[in-house]
Structures are given as structure tokens and as C-alpha cells.
Length: 212
Image (tube, rainbow, N blue to C red; front, side):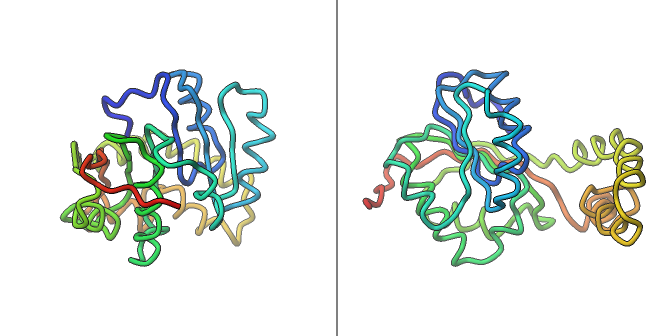
């Protein structure tokens, strides 16, 4: 997802940070100036804070309508969002999100995204970002084969986890979420009914940043 974008000594915002493991890895590996992870789940943020409270330069916030307004204009160098397709399936939500990301990103800042798309590589978010001229696609790559390979590698450990820790009534649902072979998610990608893409967007320097 990071492609060739440099995170070192940059201010990073991750939208949909989940349990925070990816954020912590990025901080340890690339030493950004700051890294803020936000997520709509209070439970997820609580877990992040418990697990990574001693990690320098890393902080977490609950994502709500007031969260973005706390960030100054052009204060972030890179924003990234991984597997948040379902969050951005309505145009109203997409518009609000793009307006705020455009505002907080510095000139020539990057928005890095990956997730499930239609078979032509389109999605509501990708289409809106490119149609309104706020961002330029610098790189767009179909990584479906990579994702399927990773799911194959992790299949045994994920199956074991589900069998050990998940109640029988919830195992089918959790198996779908983890993308185990044989689930609808896995089969859709394997049989070409869905694709997984990563996209590097760069902020269009002609974009006028909205003031708040």
C-alpha cells in the first residue's frame, strides 16, 4: 500500500486503524514525525491505547464528526486507509471524507488506499476522487493475486484461531470476515467477481483547500 511513498519524518494520518498493529509497524519501520490512527470503534481505540501507549510518535483518536476539525489545514503529509470499502459506499459519506482529507493534506500530499473494488477497478471512492479533480492517480495496481496468496498462507492459522476462540454459532461469519478459502469473499476474488486494488493518490496542487 505504501508503494514508494516515504513516511520517514512525515506527519501521517491513518483512517480506519482498527487494532493499531499496522500503525505501530509503520512507526517502528519508517520513523515518521507523527502518526495518528483514527477509527470509529471506541473499543478498537481503547485496545490501541492499551497496546501501544508507550510507542513514541504514535497516538489514536475515535473518529467522529469533530475529529477531522481538530486537524489544522495542510497539517498531514500522508493519509492512508486500508480495507475501508464498506465505509465509503455512499456518495454523501465519500464527499464529506474527501473534503476533509483534501483540507488536512499538505500540497502534493498523498492519500494511499487499498480495498475491494468492482471487476473494472472502480469504486464509489475512487470514482469521486478522480472526478472532482481533487486528486491525481499516481499509481493503481491490481493486487488480487497477492491478497489470495496471503490468505492461502494464513489459512491454517486463521482456521485454528476461529476453531479455538470463536463460539460455534459465530464461526461461519468470522470465517467470512477472515477471507478463508471457500468463503464468498475468497471465492469472489478467485473467480473474478471482485478485485482488490491499491491506489496512490496525490493531491492536486491546483485544488483550493476549504477553510474552517
